[in-house]
Amino acid sequence: MWHDGKLTTIGFDADDTLWQNEQFFRLTEKRFAAMLDDHGEAEHISARLLEAERRNLAVYGFGIKGFTLSMIETAIEVTQGRVSASVIAEILDAGREMLSHPIEALPHARETVEKLAGTFRLVLITKGDLFDQERKLAGSGLGDLFDAVEIVSEKNAATYSRLFSRHGDGPAKSMMVGNSLKSDVVPAIEAGGWGVHVPHELTWVLEHVEAPVAESRFRQIVDLGQLPGLVEGIVNAG
Image (cartoon, rainbow, N blue to C red):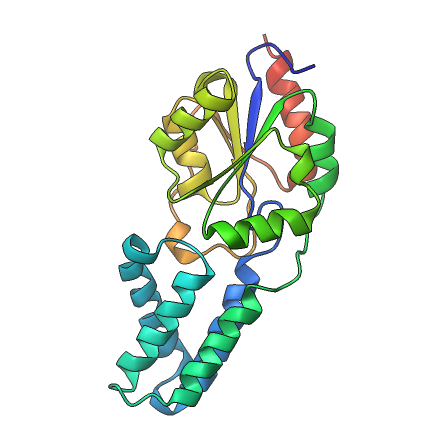
């Protein structure tokens, strides 16, 4: 039976909250820079790639496919159109490998989700490529523990207001848990909910913003193992 009180619904981010993700992008980025080492230092290639990713977010969205297309675009730019077909093929291979990487659960992910399931409505809220996110969720073995799964193109206050109203009792009785302050925490608080930051050692630079430390509904924990205790404290507070 679901909890009926000041907190009834908990949303979880997926990538780098429940399982590893950014590390695969970083490894592929290094591999990409090595492919183009005749055309600049690794730092320069990475900076150009980041510029392409930033430009392309509105076109391709988040995920590996957009990242792969941004690598191809960057390769064309830094070689002034002279990039070889073999390098393009290698970039495509790197993208395919990312789409098949094994799922590595983060510490305490399963035990925490299992502990909260059945007591609170659990909603997985993630952004990125639909097929890739579905693959990772299936591979994680966590899918059956969630009452709903939402794969969205963007995470903002309107997104959380809509989803927590659809799957819960509105944002005021909801909590969002994730590694990204920009996508998971700040907009959830703006919507009227709780925002819980679970820092990850690797977070994409485009997800960096200041922590909303002045917000009464902002919390930060070391890892997911601390979440059940935090939730209990909120529920039992006067």
